Image (cartoon, rainbow, N blue to C red):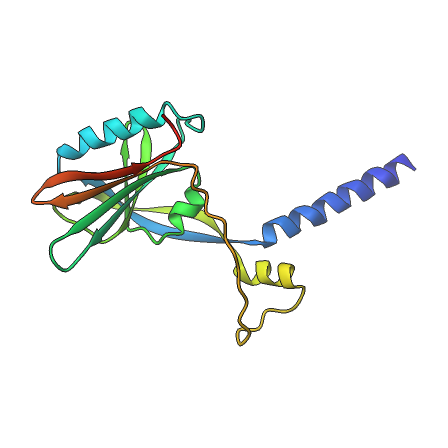
Length: 182
């Protein structure tokens, strides 16, 4: 009787674990290993990491996104944001990464040669992406139909810090910071 019960529990756990992984799709992305060319960036990164070390979520595996957005009038916006999910950051369609003080920075958006240069071959990363078809089917209890409009509400985790800069003529101008840490 005990063997049957153990088998049944093991069997149910296996089925449940398959169901958990069914909501994710394994993907792979190739990113350029980058080095930064503007040495003013070290001061900014040092202050960001120093700030993050004071936060209750900080650990040595904390990641950062580095988003570059170039506008028509030579206006360049840079947003650096801390995060703890490599799956989320790799799902942002980045083009490169670099390490600074043992922290990985994922570079997203426009490429800016005066900030970054490619210092090595592309590196492959595997990550998990949410399967939206699965999520819709589980939440609506019906088969996903591409002709039906379904509203999904995603909760964005804003508990991490974010810094905004304007980059003009090789200089960084601090625009603002959003953080729940002191």
